[in-house]
Image (cartoon, rainbow, N blue to C red; front, side, top):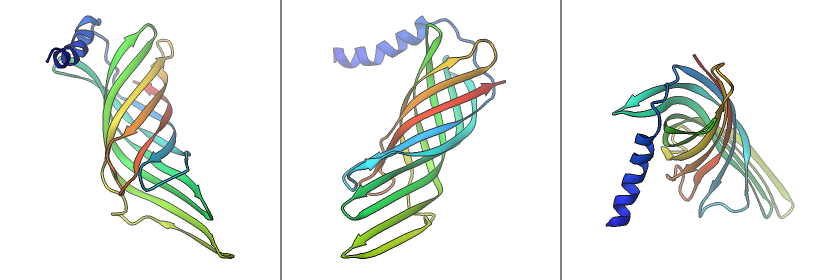
Length: 193
């Protein structure tokens, strides 16, 4: 019970102990997601680079400062196995939120996201007993399901210009396809008005 109370109380103490931050206004961001996946259904997965962009806003939620946003973020993977090559590139419309915590000139952020699949492509190449097979096409609208997960990041404001750069690790907790969880590293730059 003491450990549970400590886990609940520690983040609240950290938030209460920080100075009241000046919240950013509306902002735009863009960057690249080095997307990958893990799970029971896939082996030998490598990352694919996909674009991501969106809008964000600083808000107060019950005295807790938060950054919230909506954006189109890529998910996918590249997989090589014996005689087969598969590449999946999917776009998700994500809603996300993070609680920022200042550490010197940097800000650490912890939060979550939920996303709906809006489109993508899949490419399959196989070589079976000397016969080569290749197929590339758009994914059906129900090919991938809802995705949600946690994110942990760090971002650095560039002076008082409103510009910032950041890096976030995205950990998928859902299985949008059976046996597949998406994850990746998102490198971005943004500007707040």
